[in-house]
Image (cartoon, rainbow over the protein chains, first blue to last red):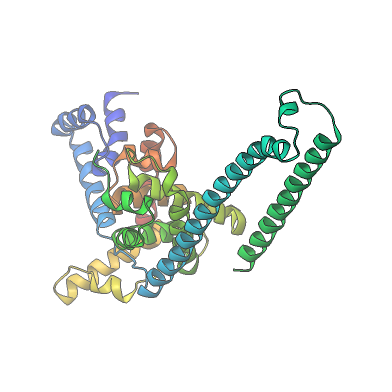
Length: 157
Length: 185
């Protein structure tokens, strides 16, 4: 491809101000000595100019208000979601703490605090494990049911 | 790059910041969507969806990035998904019937003075608008981002997720096709 052809390909981009400084320099030097390319560049100018002056279609004020209202609802929903997540984290941490702390308390109350240091599969331990598992299972089922309900509500909203 | 104060406030859940951002970008964003989908009702729906997506994703937005490019990328992804669902052929081919409508706001924004100037300018713009509407989506997009939004080539590359060389190539081809269409009128 000759220098002339290369420059000719750059002319549309020159009208769009989309050339690098090196390319701009090349084009400027070439069009000074090439009337065909100079004319071609001038042919691109009005097109670029009209494109820059096309009227801007504007959204209606109703659209902007409706968008804001929906976005506000979304922000509120997100804030509620964040709050629920924080509460859930605190509750889970508290539940773990309570479970761990209840072991020595449970043994102390049942008069077997000393034996907790040497755990055995006694009747007390099995009862305690069953009670804990039941508690966690009930909590899990409640959490799943709550999540399903919230998802249903969100879908309806 | 300076971090946009409204973006920072929106990340904290400030609704007023969102209002400021919508006001600031409403014309540019709506025009961009309208140029892509060509149907005002669809552009309006996508406009709302874009801002809802902004609210949803603002916390994952890297504040050191360009918010304009991020916003237009979200809008673009939604618009392309929409076109894929509704009119997949429109992503590659021009429409047989061009879309063009001049609103009251368009006429008010006209800067020409005499009635003759006004008429001639309106005719030229109608021609350009109609010719542009017939171009494939990728070409319409690059033209509106470069000439109407005055984005730099690098920013357009960010929005469209293609290399700078591809943006330049699309820009050149879109201008050539536009000129050809204008000369054929």
